[in-house]
Image (cartoon, rainbow, N blue to C red):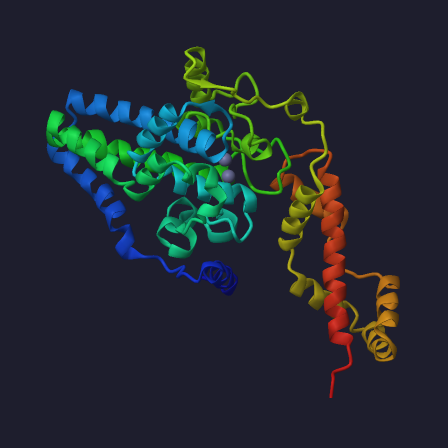
Length: 397
Ligand SMILES: [Zn+2]
Ligand SMILES: [Zn+2]
């Protein structure tokens, strides 16, 4: 890992005073579940096993997307305490820890999306780590339960939090009991592995592949095939832009199966108060907040090498007396040096057009992108100027 990566990991570890090293011991059950699939060569796929696999995939993907995500993490609709428990119970059979833990980590993801404190950002930690490695790094799987006090107040949810692996083990045993080894391996284990990876796709791939409709300052994207596999979660850029909505497919052609299931449940009064995106969100006509512009500008600026630009400026100035002049003025007063730097043109800095071309590849092409491009340009000028001033500064004796 490069030095930058190490620093970020260290920062995360410092925050909780926990290790950010990968724990092989803790990942053993996850590895064994994957290895158990080799057994399917011997057991084959019985009809019962296929039915179990398809059913458990569908039920658990819904429980995670409609329950863990849209209900527990975002409270985007309401339901009874009884059905809330059912959602948490079904979700826990996917062996992805409890609804309380999942929601705590997910709320953190939205707060720090693609910043160093986002435990599973591909931008920060690379693809594999954002997909599954982070779950076995204690500093990053550690959940701060203060952020989910609306959930921890329910003793039944805290029971599931404490014994999160029990419902999954019970279902695994039932699959073996009713459908034999094929039922356990091709039914339970295979569907568990599939549910793992499609859920993880939302953290990894949905921040890498697809298109952006909204400027969110993070890398969230909309991708139809991830949406299909995850029952609607692939409309991830929509979701990052307006996470209060129960529906994540904002256009009629953006299929969102979990939403359709929730809508059906609402006809029976099982869930209610489903939230929809407001008209201005659908039209995408409002400017993003200053925070989003700033976040976008920071990320854009970070894709250019300040070290390289400073070196290029110094090389270009080698034939002139600019650097000497800067040093001389810095000896008089730093404000003189700053004024001089503002007068001379800094060569080799990316132009607004250069930055815009890059921004259009990285982010949604919305009018507000221009503001982020201008901010990124100003930041680069500021950073290069700061470095030149530091070098021109008289050394303390
Ligand atoms: Zn979310
Ligand atoms: Zn995300």
